[in-house]
Length: 393
Ligand SMILES: *Cc1c(COP(=O)(O)O)cnc(C)c1O
Image (cartoon, rainbow, N blue to C red):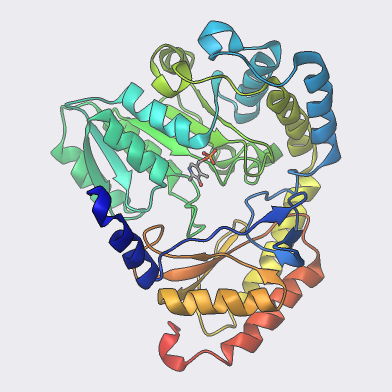
């Protein structure tokens, strides 16, 4: 694009209904937030356990702040790897029951680091069609050949992997797909990877803390353990803070420590975040009531959504998408809810496929039953205003 083309390109976005606007939040995250000067009930956060504003996390961060100051000073390889980071990595590895873990500053950075470290020119990465942007970008950055397979289709993936027999292969998948809330068939994918001697890279951004015993995530949910799995969990969602980690076999993690460029060439995260995360892990491991509460609210919401005239993608996770269809219809429903004091984000292409613009409703263990009921009442009301043509029943 030439500089002179920019205004026209921006106008195109606007006209296609694809321009994004940010809202200004004041105060802590939670089911009730103050946004643009008004209070509303929010169903948009990935803070699934309601930990982002938990006082125990803030207190842990405050204590570490007094002891360590704010910045980490340099990358982990230089002098930024503190005792707190070390303890966090050990706790994370123990929780997900893998030999070793490496802390990254974000999930995006982790995926951008892992795929190019494990696959390169001449190798093949197989990527689910609905994978998160960070896996897509990591695969591109690796210079491996990228083969996109149909969403969750193990049979087609098997054929594709056979076609590339003899080359080093890696399968990359979200464990819980971020915009649909459905689960990858991890046991089948692992069996395929074993048969074809491939790596399985699992992005558990939405499963860690939520699924499995002790909130250990998708591997615990499916009762899987294997050293060919390279597991990525994020720490800014259910864990309520910021950051990510990759766990796997000791050699795999050592290799990432030596070779993942997004670990090596970036400043370590502030030690106080590691301290807040250690406090979050205490609550995640001990607080099965939060996951039970979340499951209860999810059931209540899911039941209500299935009676509406839009297509509801059922999910065992707190991600409950309602497919509206056209961008303009999704935006208009989002605006109507906003007038009711309810904040649900509309998700449009390119984040999701054209024609599947949706409301991505997410729940937190901190929501009240009446919050969920109010959302359902308002949706029922607006279902009456929708022109029938806009529905995808
Ligand atoms: C949010 C998300 C990421 C990125 O994690 P950050 O820590 O927010 O950078 C990666 N993968 C998936 C599936 C996600 O939903």
